[in-house]
Image (tube, rainbow, N blue to C red; front, side, top):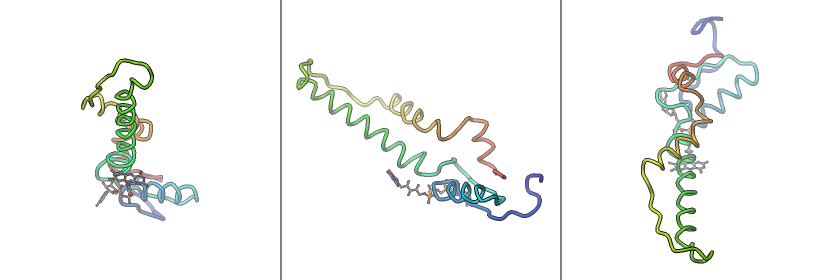
Length: 113
Ligand SMILES: Cc1cc2nc3c(=O)[nH]c(=O)nc-3n(C[C@H](O)[C@H](O)[C@H](O)COP(=O)(O)OP(=O)(O)OC[C@H]3O[C@@H](n4cnc5c(N)ncnc54)[C@H](O)[C@@H]3O)c2cc1C
């Protein structure tokens, strides 16, 4: 059946955690689902909340460990956050969940099964 034609069992608005789980659950049960997202696939959790915050927390832990390097017999070091590297690091965490650019472009408009 062509995109936009026929009957959908469920239309999900928003591809955040809740929307993705609902869409995947419906599709898993054999239902036809339309998933509509106006911004980024993955919503807050993947793009702004859970995933980036955990990446930053892991960087902060590492910085603290390096600051305490004398405990391990090393010279004391004073590492700093590098904004650009931090962004690249967060993006690397998100990339496997977000798929390719083509996939994201398709998904951003309307995604049918
Ligand atoms: C800093 C931070 C850290 C967090 N850490 C954790 C954690 O460790 N563990 C945890 O469980 N939770 C965490 N959370 C909470 C988690 O991010 C949210 O609970 C979760 O994202 C909620 O998902 P959701 O699908 O309900 O909403 P959202 O993620 O907000 O998704 C809603 C989606 O709907 C789309 N949308 C809205 N209106 C429309 C419309 N009219 N048309 C089309 N699309 C629309 C939006 O663009 C968005 O993509 C954290 C949150 C923050 C801010």
